Image 1 (cartoon, helix red, strand yellow):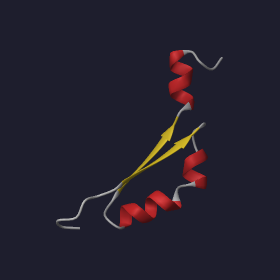
Image 2 (cartoon, one colour):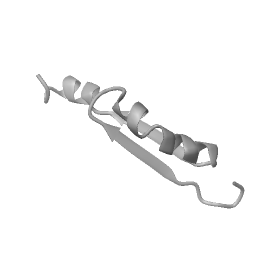
Image 3 (cartoon, helix red, strand yellow):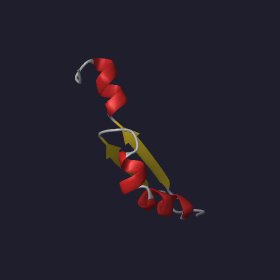
Image 4 (cartoon, helix red, strand yellow):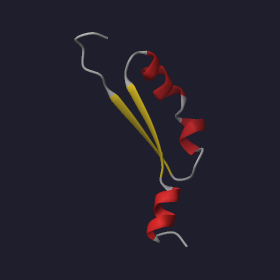
Length: 53
């Protein structure tokens, strides 16, 4: 992809593995097309800052 802008897809999940299984194929398809894909699991972040007990 020379000269073209790359897109970034962000998939948010509540627990580790949620986005890997449900939305994983979509970011993977875009990565293969030269774009970026990011999977973010919020459970660890929420546990660290104390929102989930």
